[in-house]
Amino acid sequence: MQMRHILGSGASNERKPWGEVVRFGIVGVVATAIQYGCYLLLKGVMWPEVANVLAYAVSFLFNFVASVKFTFHTHATARKGAGFLFSHVVNLCLQTLFLHLFLRLGVGAELAPIPMFCICVPVNFLLVRHFLKDKK
Image (cartoon, rainbow, N blue to C red; front, side):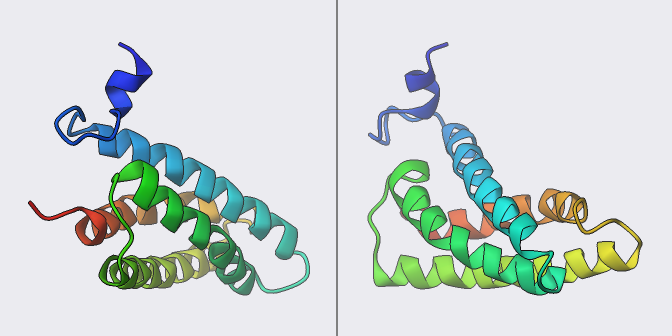
């Protein structure tokens, strides 16, 4: 199966319903790599929770642009931007809570974000999709 067929060209009648999930995964992997890389750089000079918040902020802008243009093939509007921001505030709160929980459970600071991502990424997909998906 060709990658263009899986991802779709942007026209809604050409996209497979699960193509959004694949595209979200691609954007999510890149955004998560940006966040995790920044986190690893910052965690040595500040509390891991603070490092995660700052790293999250760095990846946020990339994530919004890529989600609007690539994942959901939609146009940015103030309403969608506000919904995206809201979903990411919820996601950031969940990440902070779970990161702190895993650190308290004894998971090392280098590995604690991994189970945190496993929980928070699917929740974030549902929230972002709700706010960015064009209503038919």
